[in-house]
Image (tube, rainbow, N blue to C red; front, side, top):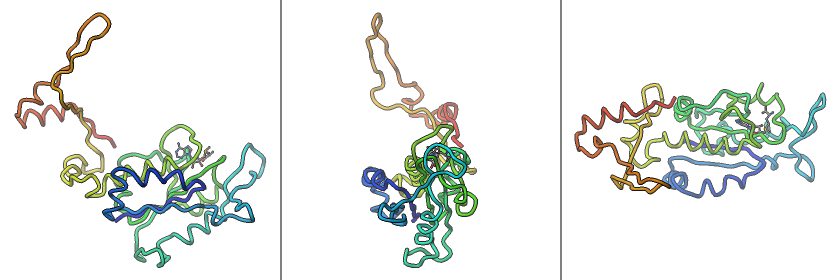
Length: 233
Ligand code: SAM
């Protein structure tokens, strides 16, 4: 069982994601657990403030260190009320476009942990002291700027969960497709019909499945798959 904890000011964004498809099934089968924590619970004053203006000036607001620190004190594995072993292997990930680019290899390494805590930024970002003193890793999902860390958290949850035996329902899939270094083997695939006939403006076309895949010759099929595959790392 791997446990994900997401700290966010928009917990509802996760609701339908957690309640659908293979993720919902993995939760029901107790292969993964997802806890979403509303950061405002640790906010200050009647408005449960979690952000403030940046020192030195600048556009927009910055998320404060204090509510994040308080949230983590509650949800880290050392807290026995959270039901995790004292020696649980846990990492705190802060999402930022300045972070280390997320890859399949990183997903593989993270899938060996007991708990992963995500800090989902919003506004103009998060007080740098969180990156310096609290987070174990700063992660980016790509070279573009999003509005928040909630989509990155769901992307990591999904990529990592797929690597947990049983989540995809076919254990041999992981054996066949995950390389020693943690890369994932992807190849071209086809399904019925064998021939799909289309009429374009001036001509008819037939889109055919490669003959080798219909041959039943597994050696040749494996060779074809290798030639049309790529290891995603
Ligand atoms: N200047 C901020 C920074 O350097 O983190 C970016 C602010 S962005 C508008 C708001 C939040 O969205 C960030 O704090 C981060 O959590 C998340 N975010 C935006 N783009 C991201 C990306 N490419 N990868 C991961 N998280 C991202």
